Length: 283
Image (cartoon, rainbow, N blue to C red):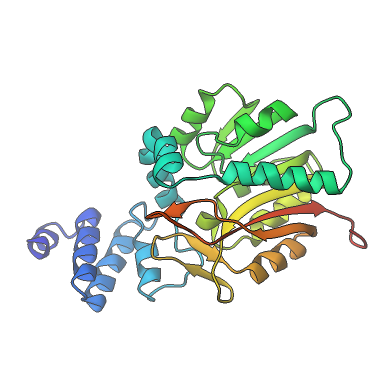
């Protein structure tokens, strides 16, 4: 039936995608690849995520497999039930991991709020529905969130905790920020959708003030480099994360194993990291 549908409507990308899924489930790898490639040909923006499926099948490079259009569409439709799903079914605790890690690093560096707000300006990259805001906004004079999905931003706005919210790409957002304009940048559960972290981390290093901190969580794996997991999320090795942080001109204060979410009741291997902007010569 699907074969007939794409024959009658060869320009219907969604039908090609469903055909690819059907062939993949049946073990017809080559046929699935042909169908997924047709999806990308028909709609290069790839909101259906055919590129990710091709990467999963080994038919496309892993880096760049998750298109911005796919991530945006995924989270726009997920937004109304995001918090309940993440906190309930997935036992998500990324914001709490970041709050604890930042607090521990600041304590080790003997940084105190001095009776005022701990942070002047906090940027929340991939802020989603704003799960980091209740933990960090009370500590900041300004907290700004950015997310690729407008529907997620709409949910975050309901909290009334952000000074400003932006719907768009985090790299483009950071590129528009002034140098040395933030003293804390957060990225909870977003590295798994970025893949190649270098461009974003370079902007993080530019936007952070001297001695400012960057805190993030990431999924990890035992092998080298970066992989695309069966769940279509990127996992980065600890060595790759450390190297990416150093290349961005940041000093890695903390990199520790910590799961931020579960899948089917099993913790997903992960890392929590805090880095600090430094001069070129000393930490």
